Length: 168
Image (tube, rainbow, N blue to C red; front, side, top):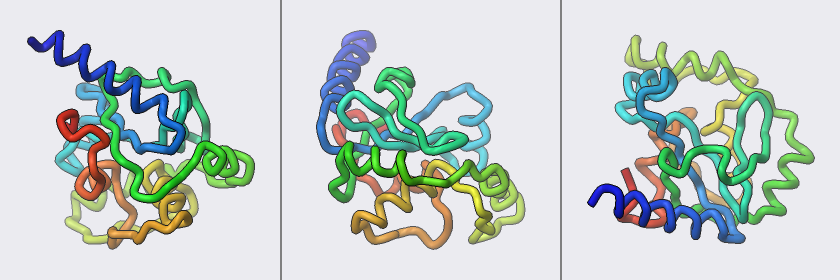
């Protein structure tokens, strides 16, 4: 039944959250204005991406931040294998050293990119969540598969689900 599947998914998500090496999460909040905009611009409700390690989430908001693992509802998260090894210490170091701020103009250009069928949107000084995640992955050895600043939906296409049967 649907209830049993949801319970199974939550138990699997709890095991992923407890791991000591980083995994990626992608947030889907169907019905929210961000997910509706993402769906319109990218075809997916994926609206946010970050890392989960141990009992903490690391993501880009106004600044790079750390939150408790239950900050987002597990019903709205899909977990992915991290393509390179990143530890909690690596992400904590990023907290200590990052001077990045959120890229409001970059975010707004995802819509402009769709309206005008642009292959590549301009990049401004701020960082959106997916751009920050990409920077960290590349710093730790991942080869960038994207031609321009990716969205969380772009990441969905290239990452391996942590638990394949839970992929949306």
